[in-house]
Every structure is written in C-alpha cells, then in structure tokens.
Image 1 (cartoon, rainbow, N blue to C red):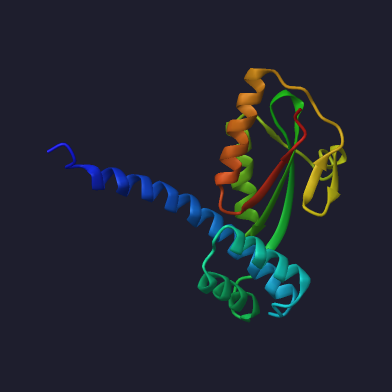
Image 2 (cartoon, rainbow, N blue to C red):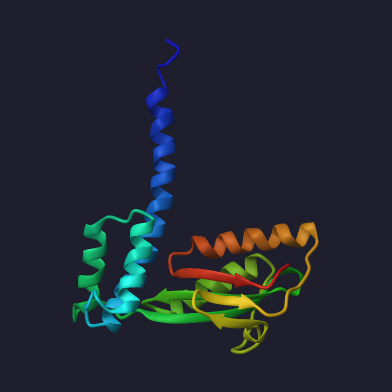
Length: 176
C-alpha cells in the first residue's frame, strides 16, 4: 500500500497553487475593473488592452476578464480608489505601497497594522516618494539604501506580508 496517500499530496499541492493563482487573478480583476471604468468599457483603449494582455500572460480565464470589464461599466458596482501609502521600513528603507481599494479607511488601518507589527512606520505624504521616480511600470528607486542580512530578512518578510493583503497591488522599496 505504498501509494495510498498520493491523492492527498496532490490535493494539498493543488490547493496551494490555486490559492496563489486566485490572489493574482483578483488583483488583476481589480486593475481591469478600474481601467474599464476609466475607458467606459472600451476594450480597445490602450490602458485596458495592456492590462488585459498582462492578465492573459498569467493565464487568467476570459470569463474572469469579461466579468471584470462588465463590473467596471456597471453603475451599481463599488468605486475603486487608487491609493499610495508611504512608509519607512527596517534600516531606514523607503517603501511605496500601491493599492486599489473600495474602502480607503479600512485599507489604511490594515496597512498601518502590518507596518507596526513589523517595526516599520507609516509616513506622511511625500516623506518617502522623494527617493523614487515614476516610470511606465511603476516606481524605481533614485537613491538606494544598503542593508545588512538581518535587516534585509526583516524587509523581505514585511514586503511579503504587504503583498498578501488583497488591496495591495505592488510594493516598491529602495533597498540595495
């Protein structure tokens, strides 16, 4: 009976990969909904088309894409707001946290909680953005901060916690 638990191993591995895919799909669905609202549902607009192509790049099903586009044009759907939070992490590294949310107050409180758990501090508007410059794909660091191994490990854990949050789309850091 050497193979009696093969299905349970496959089941657990599949559940883990499905959870990761689901999180990616939901983040792209929010982006598509926001762009669809901006473009009034026109799938030929450059912004919406680019996000749809990125979603197809991670094998997002067409039904999910169509549902997200329709949700963006629906009058009764919740409005999504784009938010950027600034913070300082381990070793004085600057963080820009980009997110999409339907409830700004809830998201702000949750991000503050994640930051405080990890020993990071929430910054005022402009306190960390000076260390970055905006480009097509997001933000790149103008000035980098060298980190030691211990601080780098703390920063990696903080970034992972932030990325696990449903409303957070991307986290940009200036660590070297």
